[in-house]
Image (cartoon, rainbow, N blue to C red; front, side, top):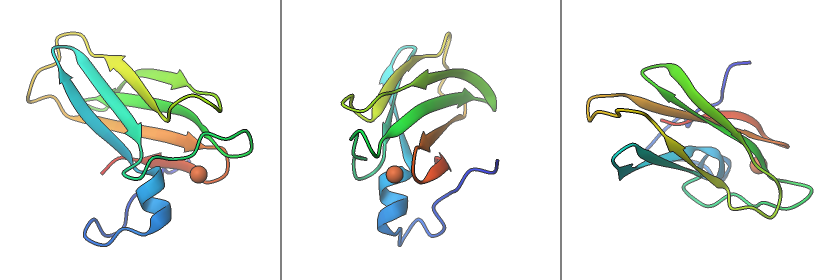
Length: 101
Ligand SMILES: [Fe+2]
């Protein structure tokens, strides 16, 4: 399944703001991925099911989430370097598969 992406980064719509993963390097090997630019709800009927982090196009880990948890996940990327390219994807139970920009 092709992930959805923000179409115009200068003019994202509400759905895009709530589903685009935001990648934050915490220092060292640690990376935090939040969903999204506006935090996504984590209710029983509507929540983020999983977050995946990729480094240089290779999957590092897929983390499962449940309603009630924050819409974020922390990852460890062994020997993460500044030049490494990070990318994240997430799945919303109602709105599908999304990729970071
Ligand atoms: Fe959603």
